[in-house]
Image (cartoon, rainbow, N blue to C red; front, side, top):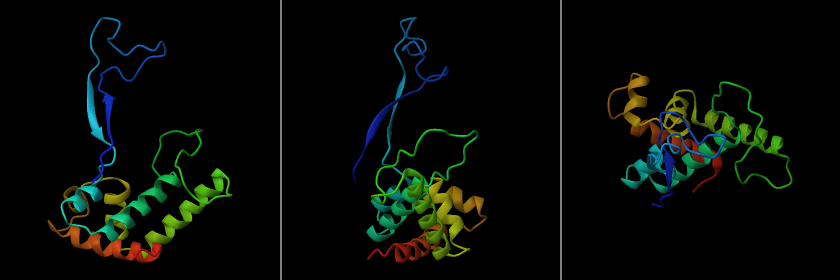
Length: 162
């Protein structure tokens, strides 16, 4: 499994200031960082441990990519920055790519069905772990993996993955 490790600042005061200094840097303090794997998601975690097949992982990653391209994540205020997701259909404007991704996402969720879309959204899009998704949905323990596999099978069929 490929890793994409980056160091992120970990400060109480927030990110780098406008003058280019990190908080506490003017006082001679070394910045605190934490190393995170940007490639890690609940799906890759399950796949790396043999709980999901390659087809399930590919379907989940396609669904998450469409969710991100459509910019469906909740936000508090209006965002004026352009869509930064790479890929999409050539010859389309950024707005048309966003609408196409939204249509694909809606189609994949509809293909999964109303009972399976909840676990898909929680694990694939929101990045929740299976135990926390099961608890939030009031499901029995260790039932989410089977339901997630069924949902990812339907999404893989929607995307035409073999």
